[in-house]
Structures are given as C-alpha cells and as structure tokens.
Length: 390
Image (cartoon, rainbow, N blue to C red; front, side, top):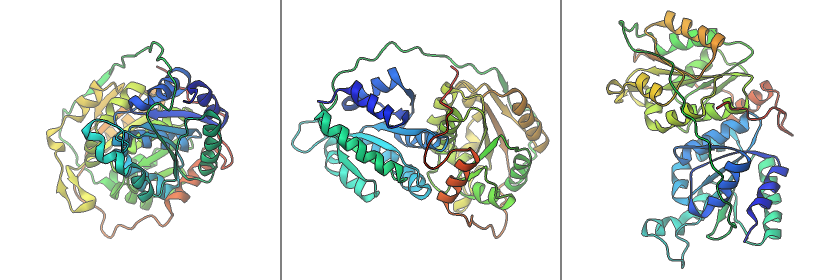
C-alpha cells in the first residue's frame, strides 16, 4: 500500500500543481490529499475534468486528472480530439473497478475488462500503479518523462493501492449572481461572422480568445489568425471548461470564451462548475443560432432554454442578454473595466460565410504559440500560481 501523503509530495516535487477530478472510492485518499493540500477543481463529469486540466496546462501548470474507469468513457472525446491533436500532456489516475476475478458491482464488469484496452486504443501510455512505495516512485518518474515529451500518461489504480487520508473540513462558498438582464427588446440577429468581428476588434495584449469547435473557430481564424487565439477543433462542449482552467492559472489575462448553443447544451454541467470557481477574468459569450450549423443546420433545443437564467442560477456574477452588436460591444467593454465572471447571450442568424476555410496552422502549433504569448517556456512553467478568489 502506498503512503498517499508521501506520494503526493513527490508529485509536487515533479511540478504537478493542479488537480481536477470526479470522485471514486478507489482514489478517495489521493483525491482527499489533493483537496487538502493542493489546487483542486471538482468537475461535473470526467470530460470536463480533462478540459479543465488541459486549460490549466496551457496556463503553465502541470496537471493531474482523477477519475473512475466508468468515467473514462466520458473523457474519450477530449482525450482523443483535444489532448491528442493539441499535444497536451496530463497525468491521469483511473481506478480499476470491475477488475477480472475481483467481486464488484455489475455495472463495472465490462469496463473492468476493457479499461486498459481503451487506453491503448486512444494511444495513451499507461501502467499499473504499484502498491510498493519505492516502485511507485520509480514509475512516477517514468510517467513524468512522458509528460515532458507532451504526451499524456495514465496510471491504472487497483483497489487498496493508497493508504487512508481523511478529508479535512471543507469550506464551501455560495456564489451569487449580482446582475441579470433578461431579453427585453427585438433581437438584431447578426451573423456569426459579424459578432466575431466585433469581439475580435475588442481584444488587446491582455486578451486570450478561445473559440468553440466548428464554424466559430474557423470564422475567427479567417477574421484574424492571432497568437492569442485558440481554435477548438474537437471535444465539443469543452470550451468553457478549458477556459476555466486557463482563467484560474492566468489571472493576469482576460479569457474570452466564445461558445455555441449546440456545444453548451452538450455539457451544461460546466456552467455550475464555472459559476462556483468564479474566475473574475473570464467572459463566456454564447452565440445562439438554434442550430448545429457545422454539421448541416439541424435544429438544437436552445429555443426552449433560458440560458441567462441558468447561468445566473449557477453563480455567474453577471448574466446578460444582449440584443445587438452595439450592446455586445458595450457589455464587453464594461467587463474589461469591472471584471467579474460574465455570461453574455446573443441570438445570431443561421447564415454562415460561404466557402469557409479551415485553419492552416496545426492544433499543436496553435498551442505552442499561445503558450509563448503567455510567456510559458517549453522547458518549464510560468511562475504565477493558481489564485482563485473564493
């Protein structure tokens, strides 16, 4: 059995300073240690965990993700379409519920047989975490070598691997919405291209723009391909979780998350996590055209959703319905001055730019130049830490 506290200290020595996870009984001691002693973000699901930790990595923190193997399936999308193309390394710990030959609940039986096969299929290097402390330390050093080569590495953790660590009393916070503006006028319904042009015109050297997958990222790229832009190419629904991780590790930068209705609907639990951790340097802009525009224009159910109310109830400091480009610009400028986690909702038309191209720069090149913009060097992390005011 591993001494969890000693193991945690070794993680710190290797520079792992940011943890995100979803609870699992096999990992509870390591999770408790991370909550007690480290910077830890509890996410709504495992895909969000990977996105949050990936954003933190981009912001200069070597990151750790913790999850049950049943939740590994929830993380397949970001692991294969975010971490793989962007070459974002994470250190993962995934439990082995349903280990063959070990009695467990029926829902874990199949996943226990395919956990390591799934990691192999995703081309994620992995190893079993030994129960012997000396051997575990040696394996940890080897895992870190993968991380330093921009590759993720996962440890598969069997029952009883970690010794007991009690969870210290946690202080919880209630984040209250202070400003909520409902729809109160006719919507202008600008095109996405027009809305993105306004947003892009307002950026400065303190701004990082994160555009969700599909036509949002492609149109932003055509408007201006800038070093402080990131174009999500997959991991649909993960953009605001990615923005949360980056915001928490780069509190001297203004993080602009540009989302779509189909994307946000896919992982709405992220709103609750964003609202709770409440980074004041993040603005979350939802461009809602009531359609999956990148895949044929099929309707979403966004017309039936009150996003402004939901974001407000999740703890966003400001949640505003902006009706036109003028209000979009004014609200953005106000956020630049006053800050506070802000949600802007703008209805847009279903029209898209014809003959829309795709970014010619590779995802991992986008990542590297953005880290350079953030003054994070390939050989090390930026000095600034995770400063999340609660």
